[in-house]
Image (cartoon, rainbow, N blue to C red; front, side, top):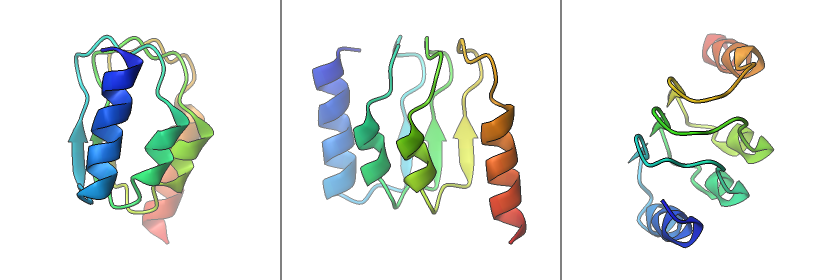
Length: 90
């Protein structure tokens, strides 16, 4: 998926206040920081892409309960996992 197309989807999701976003299987190599605008997201599926990192802005998704990052190239998702576990326990 081209960056412009991804930014367009993020913009639409922001304008329409989506709670779910499925970006799986799109050969995404980089998630833009604009993803942090999607504060209404509860579910974000990024599986089956080519991501090696996630932007810091992912932490702005305060309603996020499900983040699927399986089948990517992320080497150390443990910090991300611990962040979400800690948040759900409060």
